[in-house]
Length: 113
Image 1: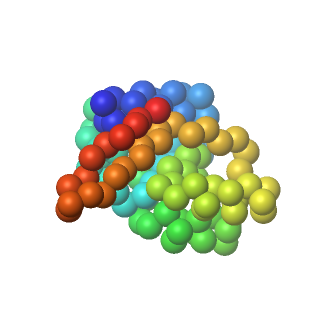
Image 2: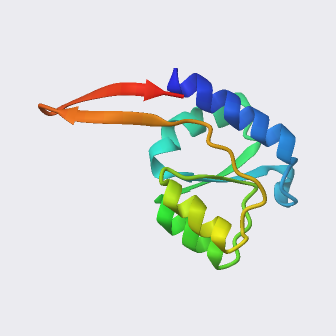
Image 3: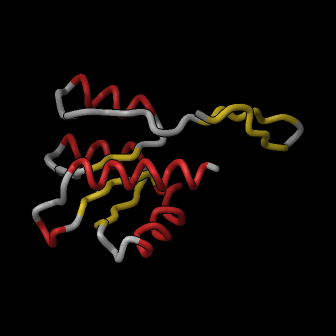
């Protein structure tokens, strides 16, 4: 379910934001935890995304230092808030929220939006 929601959200964002000037691809900065799923969808899209993976905080710092991705997918909401405070975000949408409960060394998904 998480992959389907993320896939649909990325497709909508790609075609609603237009393409990056360079290479006619959409530039996506994404949390490293999304590497596998975004690589898979990028292959389905004939490599229409220029993907840059790292920690959400390192990517935020790159944006603060002048990087201009079309899409920034952060695993940490605080990074988005910091960029908003600095007026570096044109628009933001929460596309997926998962709350986890760690109990007895088992991870249980509680809720996904």
